[in-house]
Length: 243
Image 1 (cartoon, rainbow, N blue to C red):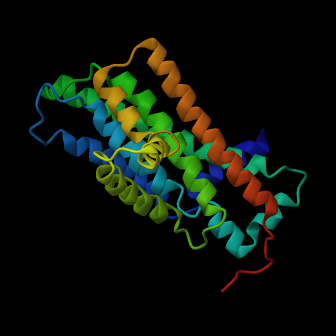
Image 2 (cartoon, rainbow, N blue to C red):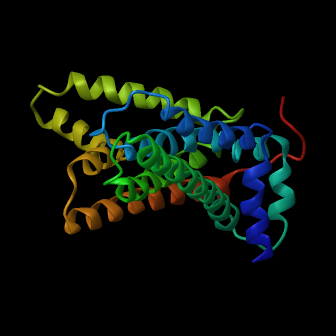
């Protein structure tokens, strides 16, 4: 357990800007109280946008890339440990940071609602769960990308890929045919399910739909993680930083 805790704790302090990100995240929720928010607007949507979609890309930047480039991962993996262990506990450390940010954000949004009579918190708990699912998918995908993209550019690749997916999805919206249907299916079910989770947060899914969403998001996360662990097991790690 000590090794697991050290690997999780490492994700909090491996970059100098990470503590500042959490402080700025809390300030983001505080500043929402200064906006003229309609009483019908669901405040939990802000949790999904920041903690679910933005936060994992910031926290996971170069999470394995820096270790591979510097050769530091050799020090970790010379101990009797499978490649799945550092991957799993680093992702767990990211998810722990997400939980703390969701808790802080939820408290601030509740205060804004009850003290300022702004927005709605009727679906706040639902958006907490959906945000955590979205965070997990993006965190595992970004972590996997960091195993073969050096320089901490894994987050930028996801942002660029998301823009491409949005444009492609719009372009294929009115297109029929097997190829178009197949591409739209890949976008909808193989990519991180941002649209599915966002729709679920705003429409209120049934218990069966919630279970399917959880299985889908968890399944994607496991697939992304399996790919990353497989890549790690096949990498040759240098003893010195590559220039």
